[in-house]
Amino acid sequence: MDLANVVIVVTGASKGIGFTLANILHEYGATVIGVYNTTPINDVLFDTYKCDISNEDEINNLFSYIIDKHEKIDVLVNCAAISLDNDFFKKTKKEFMKVLEVNLVGSFLMCQKALKLMNKGVIINVSSSNANDTYFPYSIDYDASKAGLENLTKNLALINPKIKVCALAPNWVDTKTVLEMDPIYLKQEMERVGQKRLLKKEEVALKILEIIINDDYKSGDIIRMDGRYE
Image (cartoon, rainbow, N blue to C red; front, side):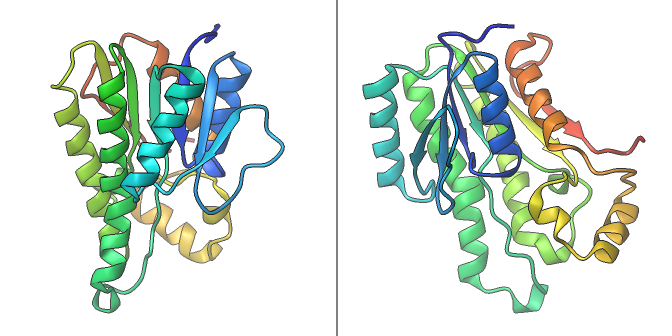
């Protein structure tokens, strides 16, 4: 597989799925722009750019940089997301809005800017099984943002038939944040949703790569990964 001359933007590229994906895409020859916000990306071979995707001015600067340096964008993968899980009755409007601004509105803005520049290509939004059936009141803002992201994906699929827009919805993944959780709580949550094992960052990243290159996936598809099998 050769992704030479393919320009791919990955948000949330400083850690977790985004970091793993950016490295894999670079290994396959793609020109990768890894977008980060608070955590710098060090010691990597792909291009990096600091941008708060909840800030439209910073997104405009990002896309100006992409065009000035790389002249085009072929693929956008929205991995950036935050969660501020806590008791439903203690959640504040500020917290709820912050989650929506990053996970949903930020992804919307990234897609909007990208679609203006893309004649063909692929957009992948990283959702969550919480958008559908593993939701929980502690993460109601996160869950709502991911449900909105899947609806956004289906709407964007109607805009340009030459651009494939899909969402990938994994369940619990072995990111650093998840591995640092209380193991008893994590075990209980996995049992609650019927998940047999943690998904690996690498397998999620490779699934995203598969969606990019495989024409069997159609625009508007929501692809589920739930780890319900050993």
